[in-house]
Length: 112
Figure 1: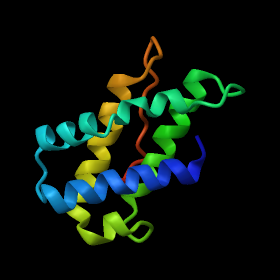
Figure 2 (figure 1 turned 180 degrees about the horizontal axis):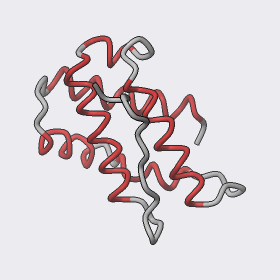
Figure 3 (figure 1 turned 45 degrees about the horizontal axis):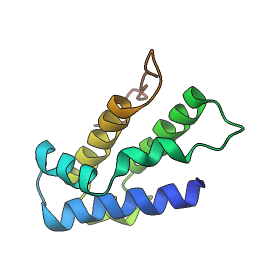
Figure 4 (figure 1 turned 90 degrees about the vertical axis):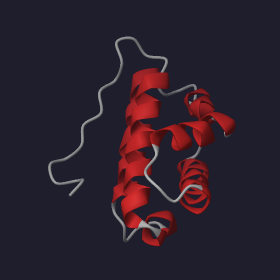
């Protein structure tokens, strides 16, 4: 999976959540996640990249969406979108194939 493809998929997930739900309801986000089969994101790993390294790359890339000036989904509704980004990180963490699980590190001040 390319970085651009992941960006498009994630942005579509966030925009769908903002447009269809418009709140910070985790259960509603999780339903969209499941309906979109988003946990298959872990299967997009290139063969030359280790599972844990790929998972960390997904986490790092997803965290970029916390910056409201970067992506249209976040600009549309920053408060809801930031929650959706955190929900995405949580669900990617919970569905990752690695044991022990790769930890998510958020830089201090990343989520005001």
